[in-house]
Structures are given as structure tokens and as C-alpha cells.
Length: 148
Image 1 (tube, helix red, strand yellow):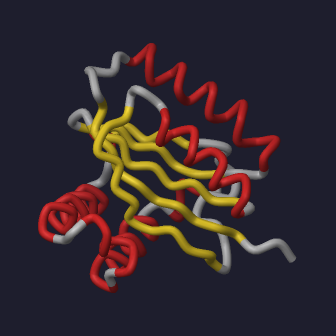
Image 2 (cartoon, rainbow, N blue to C red):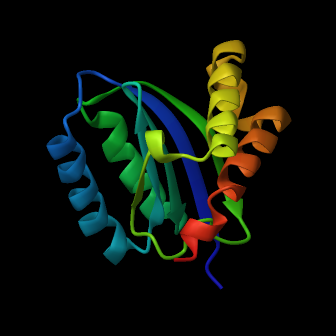
């Protein structure tokens, strides 16, 4: 059985993103992710990206490396990078959720993550148990969508 590596990051957009630009990013992500066995979720809200990448570690690492070099991203902060027992988004080559469409409990978890990012040092976020709890709560709120 191949282990699943999960990589979650947030970043600031260097410029305002139009719906057409987001559609282009999603189309390219889906084109690259599916053959690599990578699934995930992308949120864009208030000029910030929140993305979950899941799949074989080498593929996830390769994709994240491209993201780090992408001129559209600034201030990339890794929230989680670890092997997990199962995917949170097994059927999404790259799901997209408009942050305005989030349910209240999802928004609350996202706000909690945002507050943690401001308080914790970026280097310690991926090992912080508090961040891990918030990430699990946030991802858990998407289970019904992820299975679709």
C-alpha cells in the first residue's frame, strides 16, 4: 500500500485574482494532479490561498516545489507536511470551494487557523498540536463534499 503524504499551506496572492485566473489555476492543477495521483482542495479568500495536496510523497513534493516558484504566491507558510492514513479528498484532483460559500462552522475553523498563523512562528506551525487540531477540524468539515 502506498503511503499518502499530505501537504497543507497558505500563501498570499501577489496580485488580485480574477475568476478567470482562478479557473486557469484549477484547470492546470487538475491536469497535473490526476496523472500524478494527487488530490486536494484549494480555497481562495481575501487574497490568500489555502491548499491541501495529498498523494505519493514524491508527487506532492514536486507539485509543491512548483508552487513555491510560482510568481503568484508570496509568504508561503506550511501548516502541515506529514504522512496520513487516508485522503481527506479522495475524489478531487483539485476541488475548489469559494470561501464565501463555506458554512458557519467551516468559516469559524478557517478563521481559527488564520489567527494561529498570526500567533505562531511559521517554522513551528507544521509541528504545533494546536494547529493540527484546527486543521483536522477544518478538513473534517469537508467530509461530505470530499466523498462526492
